[in-house]
Length: 184
Image (cartoon, rainbow, N blue to C red; front, side):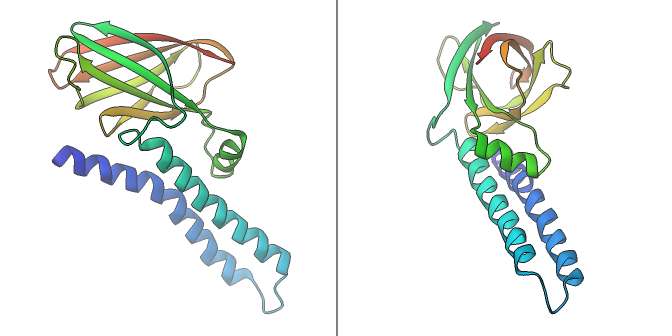
């Protein structure tokens, strides 16, 4: 129950931070406006708020893997020391990427990794996991627990990439999984 509460709080905080930043910008923006405010500037500000609301909705859809797969595609599986890692990827569309860019995020994809016990098929849904895209300069992305899996937003270059997933799951053992991804 504590893990579920922590996960939910992390998701709420992750989606609330951009909204707080925009709200803070809204307050300073109001102070700068005079009584004869330019209508076009106000309209542009409202569009930023709409983009943030839409982005929050898009991110929530991407993170709600427990309910459905959405536009996720399974790219591969790897088995290490009795645990199977299933990797699924969702490419963000241009509209979502543009909205994210306005908020300082450069993610191109959302990656979900699901771990199961090789013998029983039961989910292994607690522990820690991180994703490193081999050959790219980016630091490893911590995978947050999201329902029965672990996920993160990442930026993936075009072409073939190797996703390396390092874990320390509920049994305390360290494992390294590897799956190839062809980003077209």
